[in-house]
Amino acid sequence: MIEALRAEIEKHGKEKMQLENELPHVRRQRDEMGKEAEEMSKEVLRLTLEMAELRKIADKLEEEVMLKEGQISILRGSYTSTDYGLS
Image 1 (tube, rainbow, N blue to C red):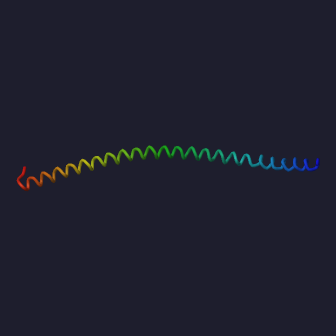
Image 2: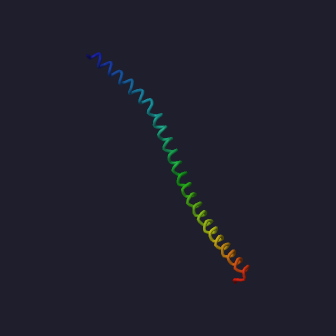
Image 3: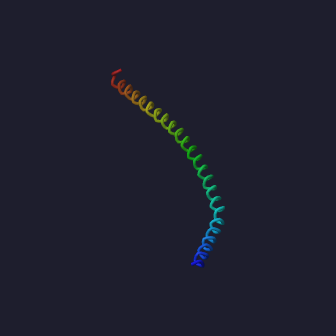
């Protein structure tokens, strides 16, 4: 019984030593992943701001297109009216 307990203690001691040896590597990985996550977060923010700016530009262009289409419709209407002497 005592020998079994000693063997168990030795086994757990070896496991503990292995885990202690792995710990610095795991911490390093954690720190690297934290930095990577922070960089990705900054990139997401940058892309979100860029996307909002591009949406504003697209909205302005869409308004300009609608304005030009309206002007073209008015010109077509006045052109057609003058052709038939309706002006």
